Length: 160
Image (cartoon, rainbow, N blue to C red; front, side, top):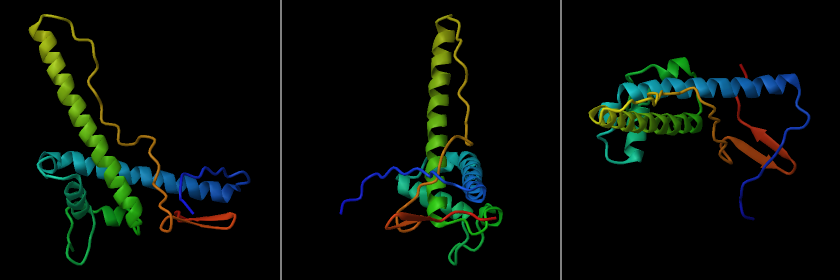
């Protein structure tokens, strides 16, 4: 059986389930914003790391406490208690991409502005902004974040 993209719609959803899904989304987006600020604050060093995988590992070491890393620089684990690793890694990927995109757009903006000023032209383009609280959603990895059995799907979500 091949695993492709499956589109599902929740037709009959009670208010309790809706609240839990919204809470999960709110917490995930808050974590993305938190991690994005960490990435931005440390981007000068992060940009020198050779591969994306190593960048993600470094970011995770800044925020996540482990046996080998008992004192991370940031208190992510305290703010996002029992945050699932798949959500954390997805949030790290999102945040890294957003910050890298912002830095690239900012550099392009500054170059274009300087070129326009040298040519004596008006520069009307607005400076790009870093939006870390975008409309991102957590990845739902099969077997980790959801399980499908017959006609039912079991999701791993926050229930505060």
